[in-house]
Image (cartoon, rainbow, N blue to C red; front, side, top):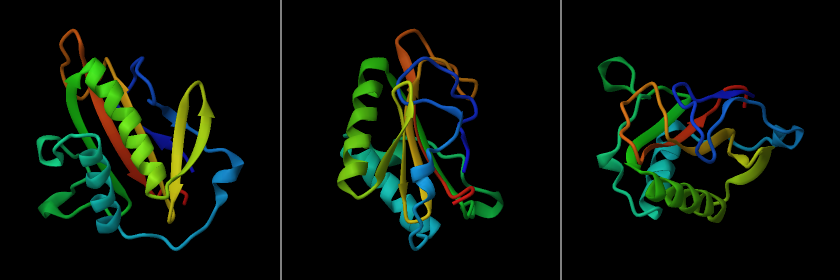
Length: 146
């Protein structure tokens, strides 16, 4: 299983590029479908006090159909609020049964029902122009290699 958050090359907490899960991430469970995970990601975002509809996703393919093995959500926030949101999403993910798997350097991947989840914020991003004091908050779930 490998996860790459393209465009998230920043210095914020929780960001990762090409992160490899630990051997403990080989847990197998019934795989949840994309709609279930999308609903879960939106609930995690709401738990951080954010409105999912105000963010964006890149997981939609042609004709408005969701990518079957990927759910993502992102939003530009002021950096302190983004950092707080990362912690709130992580806490809610654990409360909802996502299993934390530390990757080192303060990065954590979560696993549940055949999906992996990463949450992070970055003060620099290729996908959106950020002003001083802003960060890109990302919540990304994927089934690659699960």
